[in-house]
Length: 75
Image 1 (cartoon, rainbow, N blue to C red):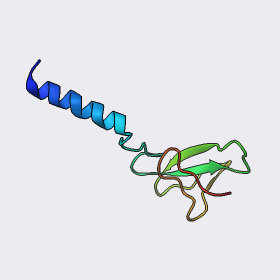
Image 2 (cartoon, helix red, strand yellow):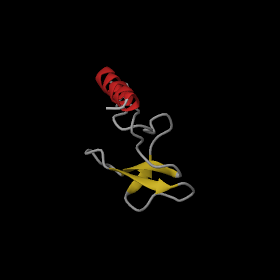
Image 3 (spheres, helix red, strand yellow):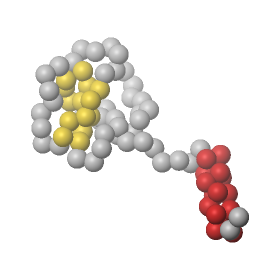
Image 4 (cartoon, rainbow, N blue to C red):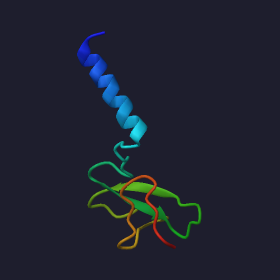
């Protein structure tokens, strides 16, 4: 196996083992997250920047807008 391939595989294994992986974003670039109105199940969607949330959805309160999957905020 070429040395470059071995080096890349070793680096990937080390990063995977250390838990140092990039976090997954909640929404794509150019979108923002919204939540379902009066929901207890945590329903969420992404809306294009500059557009209002669709019926049944609302913006998150300031300071509680999730950026990454698994972000947690106090109730």
